[in-house]
Image (cartoon, rainbow, N blue to C red; front, side, top):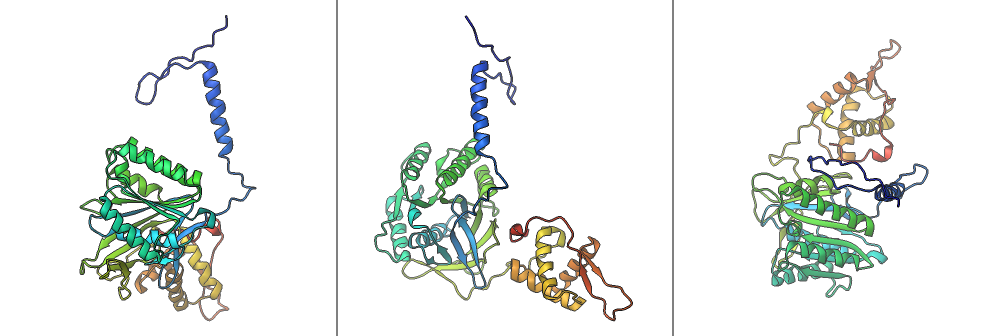
Length: 391
């Protein structure tokens, strides 16, 4: 009689003894892993299409992508900061495939189902939220939108119910989970946080949908709560924060804390007499609450961003003199990346470029004026990566 050899006793990272595994079991597991690896190969000869865009934020000077199919976003804010009002606008934009507040939504016809899961409010308050979504979307009874109130169920059952819903809606494209914290027992449990992140990444990739999750901020800072918040911020495509204005508590301000695309412009909204969110059009975007431009040093900005700005300046002015260079660097940082660089700081940028060998000054005796030369023979990423988050 032939008996499979037994793998020697092994120990895991915690020093605990692992169960013994037969050679045949080990081979089966290895074959399964190799099959998964084969499916995970990225072949440089086979192009992969960009993820379809489903949600933008419309600004005064530009529209910015904040949501794509196959990814998830995180909305954070302190208690009573009007997070739910913000997500009603995002849900309405996705449901109607149009604009709502500052959001602009679009879903393909075969993926236009929208689901909303609320884990915090009672049924009456969820009903009021749903009525706002219908009003904002301009559709009395949208056939592609369904809302669920899950407050009375335990965390594990909520998670199973959500998974059952999203895997059994064949035309699903957009999901909001208002209260992601309520799908686990402890917000600081690393294993539970990893489990939730794994579910979100699997759901979005396997079903090619976009999910927005909502989480509270810490009371003493702007960070999302707990270990769960840290992991969500690390993996999210976009993180939007909502805070009440310091000078007017009736106004809520929405800022991009992180975005894989170019950061959207901040915007503000208030609640009108009908209980609906509406934009505050005369609210002026400030990079700091004091109204001064954010101070940033050149080495804090990605090299790709610097080269993107410099190449555009030198395309317009192949041999710029100092004044032309300073002025147009400011213009292009603002135009391309919505970054305000002061007059004094832009001089530091040029000094930095010269020290790094990125810029040189023509010192030929045959020229009356000293103009600048761009040395672009440096290793930077493909131009498709140049418009990512500059900081």
